[in-house]
Each structure stands twice: as C-alpha cells, then as structure tokens.
Image 1: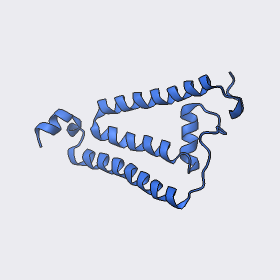
Image 2: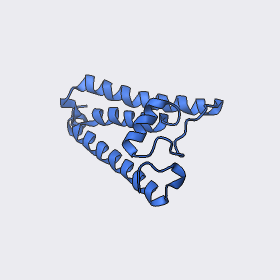
Image 3: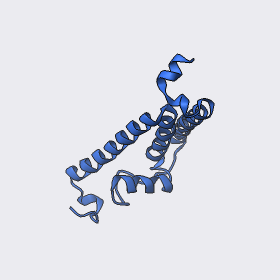
Amino acid sequence: MKDTQKPAEFSNPDISRKLLRVMGMVIVVDLLTLLAGISFFMIIHGIVFAVFWLAPYWKFPRSIFFKVSGFPDKFQLVKKRRITWWQAIILVLKVLTILAFLGSGLWLLVRSGFYGQNLIWLTLNN
C-alpha cells in the first residue's frame, strides 16, 4: 500500500505494522539507553513520554510522532484535541511525570557522573 493513502483507506494490517514499528523502536531505544546507564534511560524515557503523551495536544511532538511512526499527517487516531478542565489536570500530571524523569535523570548524572551509571556500583557504594 502507498503512504499517500487517506486515513479511512488504511486497513488493520497497515495500522498494526506501523504500531509494531513504533513499539519496536521504543524497545530498542530503551535497551540501548539502559546499556548507557540508568540516568540516560530516565532522560530518554522522559523524552519518549513527552512525545507520546503530548502528541495529541501540541504540534511539535505530533510531528515527531508522525515522522517516527510512518503514519500520514492526517491520521485519525492522533488528532489535535481541545483541552477540557479534567484533561488539563491529567495533562499537568503527565508533564510533572515527564519533568520528574528528566530531572531525576539529570540529577543522577550530575551527582554520580558517567562512572555512577553502573547499577552495581550504585548499589554497592550507597
């Protein structure tokens, strides 16, 4: 199938293949960052959360999601949404979670340095 199809013309195998592609990329990124260290994992995982959680609300993460996933820009599952009052509360909690991942990853990186990325060293020296 061509990538220039309208969203209504997508069949389930096309959607499944693209979603599997996204999940596979996230798994590979998670494994590579775990090999680099726990703070790198937390920083990159915070960025991945930001892209997936904020894509329905803001244009910049939505464009990253479309480039990574291979979905067309007008895909029906990721539409721009208006924020209601109860979604604003959930959105604030998501942003706080993202900031917690980024902040704790950066704090651990600054506190322990690159040597402190080793989980065995962290558990034995604390």
